Image (cartoon, rainbow, N blue to C red; front, side, top):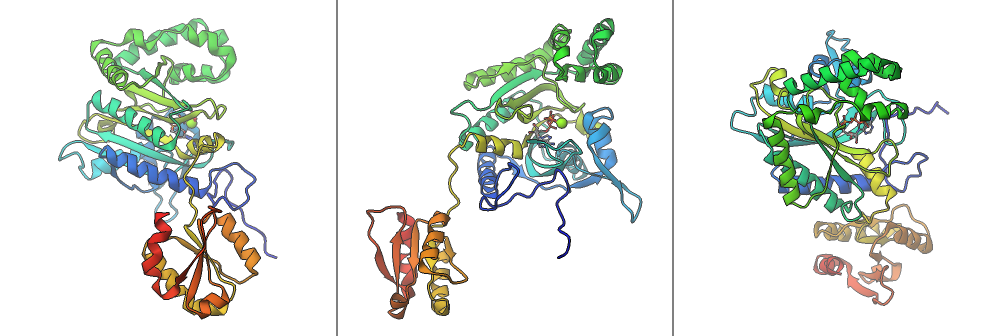
Length: 436
Ligand code: ATP
Ligand code: MG
């Protein structure tokens, strides 16, 4: 036998639940349910769908994300196009690509724009539960809006998504909020931070020493327990914010308060990318270990200009779909089943030519029918019908079919009687299957 080829490490297949898996991953039905729910919620808020390429020029991410970010320093899948020597990168996140596209097509010419996209992202990280090398994000951006109204609306839209996904009730995710102020305010804070950490240089771990002069804010993000006391006592950005930044933050907060959304102001919340300013937020859960951030975002008023566009403010977020669905799975939340309405039991495959048109009629009328194919005993077919989750078995027994009839047998309601229906007339009784 030929050697079996395997998927690239850290890149997963998303498969039907019936396929046995060793690794814990969301199944494809859960995935589709998420997609449908996202489309529904986002359209309620007037967000429009967009699709950008998965490959972009490397320079886009270097310029967009900042050279000393984790992503650009060590997580990007970059390569040279062997045909023409172009430097390309598999997108590690979606914001830079959306912004590139909007600048390229002058999309803000007619005013601000709410857009979203969904798809695979690539980061060369150590694969583990909730952290993969190909993972998927829902990415949502509001471009050209100065806020803070749209910041709050966006956060409330995420709450609405949690509600639809069944995550709100048990408070399975919570909101953390912060303001990063403006560049000048961050500079002053950064200076204060660097001199503070310099004074305590002996207590810094190797990672933090490296970051001290390149990206001292990231030190605050350190997960090293030995560093926590030092970090706790460091100068806080909030104390360096001016009136306008504070007013923006208050604007977001009072809108969230008015909408009854609870949150925690986390002055230590910084985001991985350089481009953020003012509002930043994360939705976190305690159920996924150290991969607890399911969604993160914020304002990035400088990015559009930085990438060559006419200056325009913007705010957005990325949501990790695998992480979110792992959480849904872990909590065993009730997810609408993807079961067919009916399962066609066909004891004599030679009768197929008579049966197939009836199944087509049912499907055209909106009834989902899973047809048993490949023969087998009545007993084994009924077993399959049962595990399919179908509400009815359509039993095309030899005797019935000879008389042009099919038995419609309820599978989930023991008290409901079986009825006999004419095969040729499937359009007339299709509704009976849907109304139940
Ligand atoms: P982390 O701190 O966990 O590395 P991040 O700050 O790098 O996250 P973002 O760039 O903000 O993550 O991406 C938004 C979301 O995408 C994250 O909150 C997370 O849910 C998801 N995500 C990020 N990296 C991965 C990954 N390697 N595998 C799976 N999901 C990921
Ligand atoms: Mg990361």
